[in-house]
Amino acid sequence: DTLEIRAENAADIVANPLIKELSLSWQHLREGTVNAARQLASLNRKAPYGLSFSGLFSSFYDAVRTGATIDARFSMTSATGVMQAIDHTLALMPTAPLPAPPSGRVPQPSVMVIGGTGFIGRHLTRSLVAAGRDVRVLSRGKDGPFADLADHVETVSVSLRDAEGLRRAMSGIEVVYNLAKSADRTWEGALKNDVAVAIGVAEAALEAGVKRLIYTGTIASYDMSDPTRPITEDTGFGDDMTARNIYARSKAECEARLIAMHRGKGLPLIIARPGIVVGPGGPLQHWGLGRWHGAGAVRIWGDGRNILPFVLIEDVSDALVRMIDAPDVVGQSFNLIGEPMFSARDYFDAIHARLGARITVKPGALYGFFLMDRAKYILKRYALGKKNASFASLQDWRSRAHLSPFVNARTKEKLGWRPEGDRKAFVEKAIGSANLLGF
Image 1 (tube, rainbow, N blue to C red):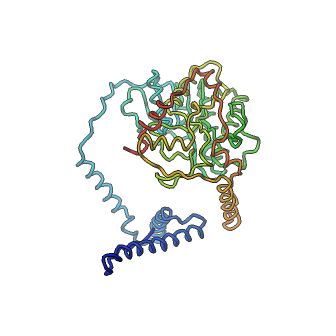
Image 2 (spheres, rainbow, N blue to C red):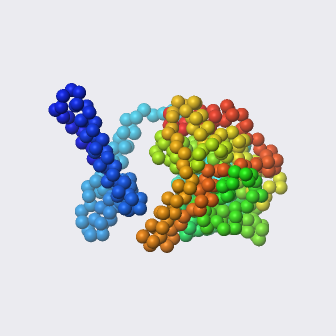
Image 3 (spheres, one colour):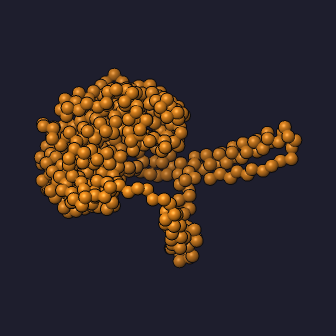
């Protein structure tokens, strides 16, 4: 959302480049100031990216509402032309060698993975197959990233709000992994899209006679603001979660209600809480590390010098697979945290050393984050009249820095789990072969 005019000038050979660059710098100052003022006045609702979609939607729906001619750029004719151009382009591209065709064997799933096409779900599904199990993956679509595993993986499309559909999908299933989560910005939305869905899955599992329901919570629900207090699975989340961020609060509420179903209805529940998961297929811009400003710059939570609860994706999958047969684990929770190795700064230094990519890393003042969040809340609540606006406490912002150390002795003892402990091997798996930069 900027306009920049590059024009030549008639100044002498010495002043010419100076005048040209000064012209650009003043334009950048003008455009940047205008955009900053627009975003400030709109309480960050008029960013250029958001405005582009707002304009598109308004143009389309205003035309539909009034019966006017739709802007040609947004018409079905243009959409068809774009799709045809993509098809024609694909037809001209050389075809990659196809994977070996499946044998035609029909999978006999005994395990279901809800959220099997996500980061953890994809790796878990492949780990289950490698362990000799057929898998039924619940997905929004009928296809998934498992064409090479068609003999062992079937993908079914079922709404997580469809109770009867869930029960049918769980027919013949012994173990269900629920990796689903929502990204709501209001507590009301989280109750509807996260908590209610988790309960619905649990009720379907009970009715279908599932032997184990493995639910993935999050370590974000813990109060990690005190660097002197170690965290184990016996550490509680706290009685009042209202001043925590929506994601942490929602996941804690899901766990509380599922535990109540375990105690009251005999739900065969196991809870897994992964740490900051890294490895192949994972994101470079992990929000467990800080607030990202594009792929090349991040403001880390705090000073970034405390050890973070990193864990490799393959170690997470290994622990989840072990939960199927491990004795005496129903009704328990497990923190999936790797060996203590890296701070946030160590991690980004390792990326630079291994890949040669220098990401701009700046410390983030947690108290400053808190004050800004509180100011936004006041403006939203009283200037915009949003009664459902929420804000996170200073304790919550400190928790995002993962200041508290973790002790994962229970996971190691009960599951026989041994996460990667060699620093060099960890770097190679988490960074070297993880394709973080896309090449």
